[in-house]
Image (cartoon, rainbow, N blue to C red):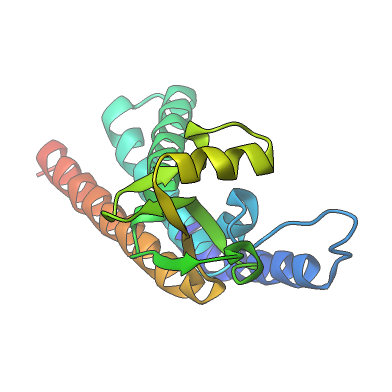
Length: 190
């Protein structure tokens, strides 16, 4: 019953959030598709997350046998898994790289993962190694051998591949939790 409720209600809530996010005034509170709150609230990820929470809750409930404690452990475990996946998210799909001049203008709706300059030997030097003032930073980078700018990024077209890979991981963990819960149930009630 909880799974049926999750599969029915969470997509509707996700659609409402997507509608309100996409039609809201972007100048008042600009958010992008890669913002952690927005990313986790639209697409396939909310359903996969809710299913994982439900499966982990059933498994932990079978193991702990104390309702409030099981709820706390489930919330902690689900949160830990989601934080780990959010940390791994940039590497779940290969990033694009641009090299040249004035790159920030070409990646306006992109999730920038790193930028800096490339030396003649191909070594990458990030902007964090130089001063924060633009003209001084560029001079510093050129002094370090920088010949061209580079930027690593996920364009907005990477939204669905990233969503599907992350949802697949969550659904695999959900299946593992369900399988483990059935094994525990069979072991306790043969």
